[in-house]
Length: 402
View 1 (cartoon, rainbow, N blue to C red):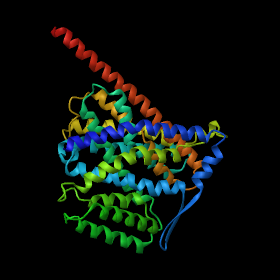
View 2 (cartoon, rainbow, N blue to C red; view 1 turned 180 degrees about the vertical axis):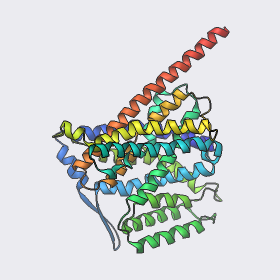
View 3 (tube, one colour; view 1 turned 30 degrees about the vertical axis):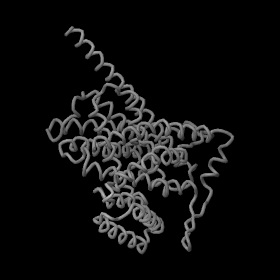
View 4 (cartoon, rainbow, N blue to C red; view 1 turned 60 degrees about the vertical axis):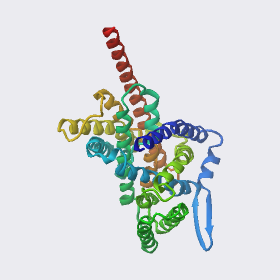
């Protein structure tokens, strides 16, 4: 059951990569077309949500970032909980190598970023941007080029990306939740505590969790806290045990929400955040310290940190290399971890708040796109070559035996 759910997750994530790519490409095209002003004006336009006396007003860009992306983080939280309790992360031996690799993949990019911007005189607060891995894009590239490679590499990549997401969420909570209103936050804590108790009762129906999440989300926005944190916290209290109708709320929510996240929410976020107008951008801005720091952090830092820690875990016998995989194949996966697209853009929007077409946001997008494209292309090439080499060796062995 655990393996089937994980494979369904992989299939949906990989399949949504094409939709994400199309959304990002569309945003780039529109941002550099006669519709550019309309595109940015639409994203900046304010819209109100009113439920009785309660009112929330945010721009479309903010509704996507704080509203729709909260559902994305809820699904990520559900995935993390499931993998820890029932999936690949439940086995400490399988967990050690990707977890250590993920830690290396978070530390090294930050250090590369800080080294680059310090040398070039850039802003240091952007160091968390190259730390994240985009699960959907990374798995999409892997699925396109990795036919014939061990399935253990997919599990390694997914596990690593899960830990990456958890680390990114923790950073978002610590670094980007200032000016918190403690009264609504106290209500959030009380509701989460009540939900944790209610989760022990098998008769709790699904609408309870839907309404509960909506209320927790609203109070989180009112508190001024990043909705990503409470979304993951809410996921932690969703029951994994089956109810009397034989349905587990956690599995039901993962199954029902994930296609919407993969094919609607993430593409919408990509469309809202990937649009960068190249009008007036000269070589100086394209090579700005912020751009270089992010791009090199993703491209160089990710591959170095992931591969080094995976090798170290294997050398010290703390963990094991993915079953049946070669180090060339592990290196290819390490490169794919530098595809930081969605999460990096999300963190970039928090690290440099302001207009979506501000100079800082333009540079964040240029850096994320540059580093992600380099990582994805080279990672795909390495894995394709590794798959071809594996196929040729298999054919040579078969001919020898014949």
